[in-house]
Length: 514
Image 1 (tube, rainbow, N blue to C red):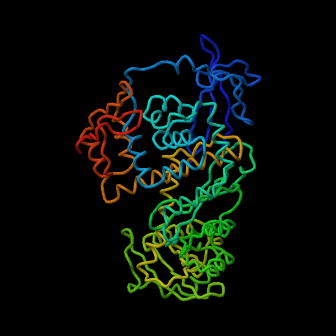
Image 2: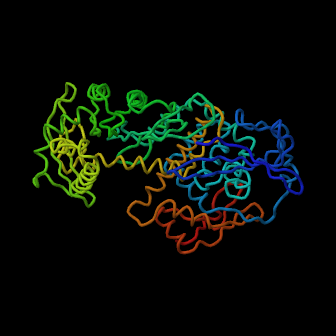
Image 3: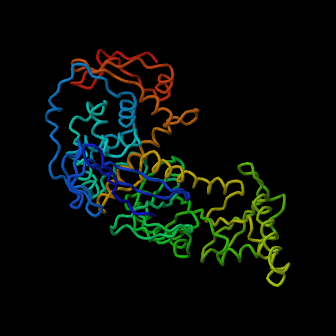
């Protein structure tokens, strides 16, 4: 991954600097830019722009404000009539109140509640960098809901640093209590993702994941399998492998007096120690075993001939699979191995194996017996479990891992986890905390569209088109169109015709008809 750099453009009225953040995703180069503003002294790293004022910047320490912007002349302007962004902000605030998230979020950052909630809404509703949060806030209903927000550009890094130092025990206690009244989690899905970061901090380490080498921080998420929402997160150094994190992650979650009934794990978490740990803690599990491990080869070699039989066939996601369950001794405990063969994938991989073998010189080719041994591993996978399930149940259990991939997608693409543009461990933690509460807010909102053809992404976009007009301390809401009314019906959220800004309440209890 290329390092970020500063590029200077010489224009008629002076030199202007831009930060370039090159990155590679799916072998495609991407460049994200951030405007620094006018160059005052390039050698000393001093710049000026309208939002930050005069400041120092370097990649080691980040932004340091020298002279904040003089906003007084703008702050004193009184608008008698002003249009503001309204719809999606109003709806999200109503939803967060309804599901009891709003009070939990307010308690995270005492004294700066308005700033945190503004950053949450900004991350949830836009894909812009933090540098634009102040103009967005000042032109939207967020400035009326959270009037004490201090989110000028030079303050963002201060907020991220402060949030990163907060002990999150109270937050997780309150959050988990809202989700689980009985303190019982039916099942969890656990996985991690890399967060690329070239800034030299202790959490950033070299990681080799599936042959891709990068500098990164490792983010671990735990998802509730049935509710399909994140319930916990951890951050570890980029060079720590998944198998080393399982026990600490579960122990941390259990410290909140939450009883975990079972866990769904990817192959990266399988080890003898981890399997014994799960048994000893009465946590049932379903875990994938990679086929090139010695134990996998032994299981496949022993039972392969019993699997390909129409009595063992199932159709899963339109594909024919053969699955057979075997009772096994799993590191001293009674367990089960579910051996599955994907008929289509196996046929393709055998054809590739044979073609590759035939392309070799005769003396380097595999013998027929060697080909037979190699082919037994093709199109085959093993799921190990403490649960005695029907062969039709095991794949839906394991397939719930897809939920966590969806969550990581929301985290990176909707909640702007990337690019990571912070320069300290505390700022990393603060950024990831905002990302986490953004993700759980989005997933909760998205769950309200279950069973419909819509999603939170569709709804937030169209609701964002609903504007309001501020006249004499009141907001007059524009008439919602048919499409917006449809989303409001699904969410069961009426829209006021007029809001009194002194109380933020609907005037005369008069709402638009949905």
